[in-house]
Image 1: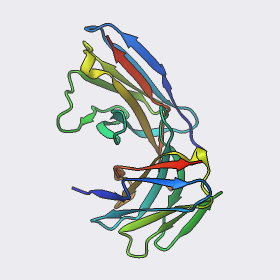
Image 2 (image 1 turned 90 degrees about the horizontal axis):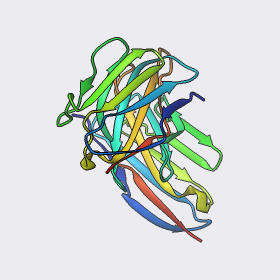
Image 3 (image 1 turned 90 degrees about the vertical axis):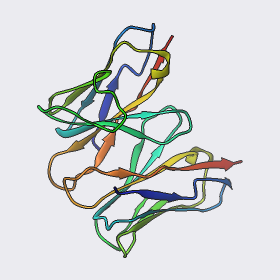
Length: 116
Length: 111
């Protein structure tokens, strides 16, 4: 099956710093990538949808200046949490949808962010 | 907008028992997906369904695309401890559209 990787798998940073998370589709080209956030024992919360070469579409309530998303190629999307604060601590999961045909959506393993 | 409901929200079962859960939509869907998420991991795709009435198995798991196209079901036979996790359904109305995800069913298996 299709594989999506994320890096890093976990990160601890000081308040005020910026953190970049990478999401790669390893064996397929992803026209669309998604970024989710998940709090403990809660469901997936879609943050934004990004298409290769265009600006991301953010869900209501998600600050686009705080969560910068770049989808520069068909295999790579990045999420940068700018000026991170403790309330940004969470589990961030990316997902990728492939090109035409019987499309489905595959998830990365997630990145746990802890802001001190 | 589209919403998916999953039932039950959580369940506790004894090891060896069979499990049934379902997902319902207010819209007609053409694709249903079922995922499992282990603690601290990303969701893993279990089964994908593309036709109404379709019944697909993956080991002890069986999922069905409801004939009304507004629901889908997932069954797990002879549960084991490693079945513990959150099971998410996802669906979409048309090809090319984004998938909508359900809130998940949290499964606990008691030894």
